[in-house]
Image 1 (cartoon, helix red, strand yellow):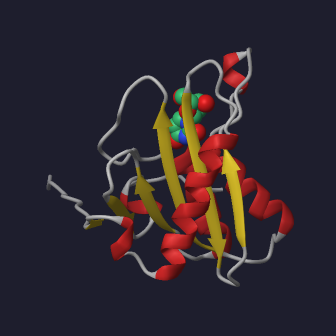
Image 2 (image 1 turned 180 degrees about the horizontal axis):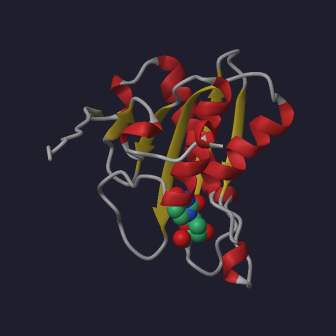
Length: 160
Ligand code: THU
């Protein structure tokens, strides 16, 4: 028997000012999406923006339904929009931000398990890591190198 330890590094920027111009623009687009979220049930708004390797940006926000399981997360809306419009172009970066209308959330919130799996599929599909930028109410921004860091031992198409 042996014990295997997996760890990962991520970057913490003190504010959006420290980001590159293109990452700042991407996060700004995600922030713009917060207003367009349809979240009357949770009051938890999610804005997302995916930048492809060719520079194109696809946006998304969470879309809820009175039949709760039908709610769709913001990051998945952005990725599915990119996949539907430009199926042959890899996603390079994904900015995600949230606004809980009921309370302030200081720490950047990372994607739910289902979204991690979907982001993983898009990495697998194009064999390209997707950088993930996360921001909540506080100015700080986290940068993750790839979803595989937050979905260790993940399931993917190599098993099928
Ligand atoms: N939500 C997202 O959009 N992304 C996530 O990664 C977590 C949750 C949405 C779904 C639902 O509309 C609301 O946030 C509360 O769960």
